[in-house]
Amino acid sequence: NALKTGQVNGGLLDPSVAAEAKSAGITVLNSPLNWQGFVLADRNGATEPALADVRVRQAINYAIDRESLLKGVMLGYGAVTSQAFGESSQAFVPALDNYYAYDPAKARELLKEANVTGLTLTMPELSAPYAALYPFLTQQLADVGITLKTIQVPTDQTITELRSGKYPAFFFSLGSSQAWRDIQTWFTPKAPWNPNGATDPELEKLITDAQTATPGAEQDKAFQAVNTWVVENAWLAPFWRADNLWGTTADTT
Image 1 (cartoon, one colour):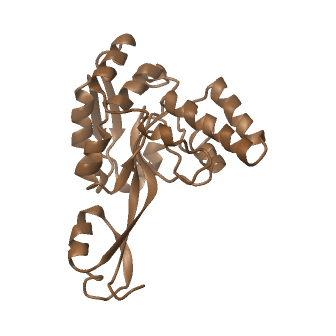
Image 2 (cartoon, one colour):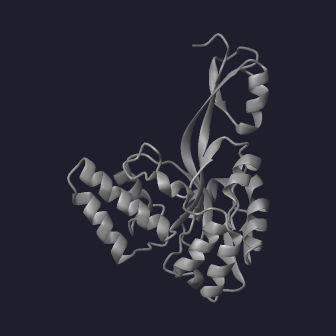
Image 3 (cartoon, helix red, strand yellow):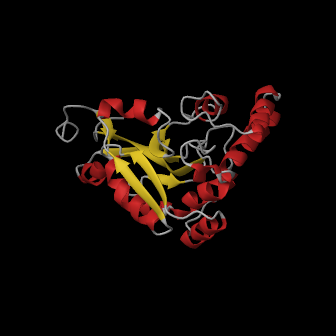
């Protein structure tokens, strides 16, 4: 409303008002920002043993219809992906964006191979605008035999709850910046967004190789090897890189 009446020259916009803004003559600019999706935190199976099986984590990835969710919930503002590292990151691998195409039959097959039935994932439910996602996620996971149970937590306790280690998986929105910083944020045993302290010897070696590689092409390749391992082993289930929307008035350059 402030943009429409000229009280401000620019401001952040939510996808739900982008069409209205455009019709009012507001210029809407968009650029990729955070990746959004599941952090499959309990990769070592401390609280949910099933998640220690890579096939179960892969099944969760295959169960998500990223394209329809992006269109229906985010109104198309973003780009689907199976990787957390952004396009400007040294670790980015274009081919990994579509690594987990929507395939519920494949998800069910993997769960059967892992001999997993009746899996329930309990996670905190984030507030708007993300709350609209949960009914769709519940339906898509149920379609492959996984029950999604969400619980309400006070908004001011959300981060504490997500990082508590109590939840085997949770939906969140996280930004990607420099590859080494992202690795320290997401994947090392003491990383703030690795709340269960999950680790793997193969991954640790790849991280060390990236840390000690010669800056430039050699180190970029080492970062990409970390990214590839993480995607193949489904430590996360990214849905998309969401667009950051910025509106400006018509007379603003």
